[in-house]
Length: 305
Ligand SMILES: [Zn+2]
Image (cartoon, rainbow, N blue to C red; front, side, top):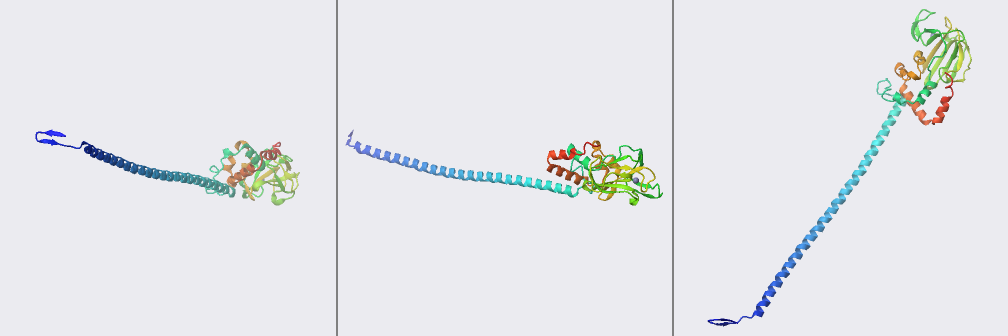
């Protein structure tokens, strides 16, 4: 009850409190509801972002995998291309094609420096090199055009003439097989021995006095085949030594001067031989032959010369 000069007024405190509590509870309830709604919204948005993040992460991983896969494929292709290029180069070597217009492009293909000592030994055993005589007086007539001592006309001299005493021993300049061994005129060659070597090479030993091998005999480098004479179109005791490649005579002097210490000189001097493809073939041949067999092969005949 509140008193004033005009009288008394009554207030119901209990009812007033009830009203205040009602509003308060309603307010707090509303606030909590609001917070819950906001939290729920945030939560669903976070899970949405998480989902998107995972999705992108997956796609990224897929791209990385694809990239790795493609890289592997590219390097495989590169390897294949290189192998094909190697094969082409090998084939070019074997069939004698070169980029340098019939200059055989030796330097650009098989590096001379890469030829092993064993390969050199192999080549020096099976290809004509060195002199067919241990002793001779002089080169009485070189390879090339000359005035013939008997006919007095200009003609091609197809070999190198070595003036020597009668019956000076004549040795094979490489391993090979006796293709022809006959006494007589033989087209001016006189008594002659023709040897067949590997890879298209032949050697002729002409104007002989006598022969010690027969057609079909296999001979080693340095083996005695005949003795110097003066038969056929000859004006004195001498050996006519001829080197042939694919049926054509080539400068025998180049091959006589050829040895291990000047091994690569001949590749520049003698342009009629496709040295590149020849070396390539020997290279491949020796790679397919076990080392022991190579040594065995070379061991025979290395004692002589
Ligand atoms: Zn001659």
